[in-house]
Amino acid sequence: MAAISRSEAPVDITAELEARGLIHDTTDRTQFAARLNSGPIGVYVGFDPTADSLHVGHLLGQVGLRRFQMNGHRVFPLAGGATGMVGDPSGRSEERNLLTRDELEHNVQSISQQLEGILDFSGPNPATMVNNADWTVQMPLLDFLRDIGKHVSVPQMLGKDSVKSRLSAESGLS
Image (cartoon, rainbow, N blue to C red; front, side, top):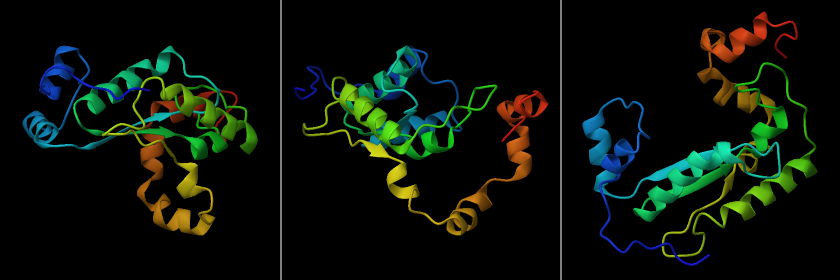
């Protein structure tokens, strides 16, 4: 892909995102805007590799990454290779079918190739494709429970609508 360029000077990205209705809420709008406009930040969007193709539901994230990249920020499209292995049920009322590692790897590669048509991976501000499987697959279970699991409480989990609906459903929560 050719380098992404802008003919005009960089815009106030916060104002641009707000004008397009892309910012719903922030903790401190003034600090948020100041940080975005003070220099490059890193921005990521996760893509679920349970299929080998992006779809219209991914478009908002893709456009967001492109806008940030065009304004000089570092962008990290993230393939959820590890998340896909455990069948993340977010937004679903039933358990997902688990894919093999080969299927997930194929899907991650396909999505990566598709993102190359949207983001610049080789210009002066290249996007960096990352896969959460790269840093989680080899992590021993006890290390995961100790280092990561301690940050997630049962009340937090039970407070999530997706967990509540699955607990009350006939299929339950696995």
